[in-house]
Length: 205
Image 1 (cartoon, rainbow, N blue to C red):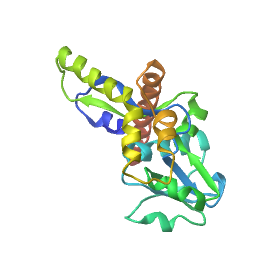
Image 2: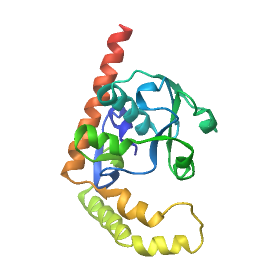
Image 3: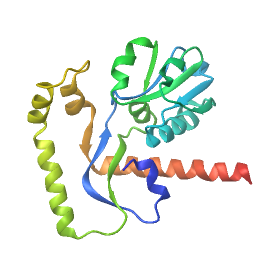
Image 4: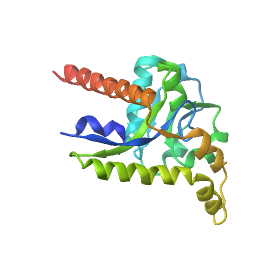
């Protein structure tokens, strides 16, 4: 589950020792721009990633100290990223788009500059307490999958052509262990989201 959704749940339990995270540059969650940060006037928000949308807004307010206009992006919006309009792009699309833009801001790397912490994009969550035996077996299954990364990558590359280094991405860019530093980072991010939500309520009132 994207971690930005967690504050909206009535009850949640993180049930795994693993996550989708990054300790520094992730390479696939980017703010792309023709102009430097201080010249950006508009930012298009990728509707495929709630967490990335929340993250870029936290960074803009707390770290970059900019106040762009935010716009929900439509399908195939990448061509609209130009001039003083920047855009958040996530996933495989970022690998082909990187060369088109002069300024590339990796959101996980920017978060680490801001907090000195890694970042957690998603984790395994339940909306009720689950039996300890299930959680133990579930974690064992995830552990086995991660231990098989080399075989999985080899099999994938035997049937797919890619324009990026998937081995480097899975082994060095993504970070899967939900350790104490990532838990600290997750709590910090959720606190920021709650603070932003409270500020919005105050503006409305």
